[in-house]
Amino acid sequence: DSLLDNQKSIDSLKKTLFPALLAAAGVASLELGGVELPGVGDLWAFMQPIFFGLGFWRVERLMKNCSQPGETQAFTGAMMMMVAFFSLLWTSHDFVVPMLQEGGLPRL
Image (cartoon, rainbow, N blue to C red; front, side, top):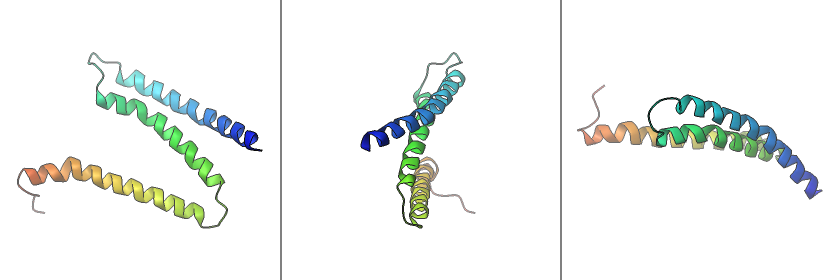
């Protein structure tokens, strides 16, 4: 039974990884087309579709294991809270901290 589950997981990974690799190839063709050397931003742009595909695959596996009616909503809520938290951190780092270092937030 475990071998069958592993085969299903591998098949699911193949179905998800191929589109992610195709997206990464598209990003690579767009990002690496200029005369500038690739930088850190290019690396992030290249890795994003791969990690998105792997994350989607893991979420799919976890959702199949949910047996109680409210488990999927709780899982989705936790994912959204993490996205909101890291978005707030990123925004604070990129916009709020530099404004405070320059003398404070502008008056609204």
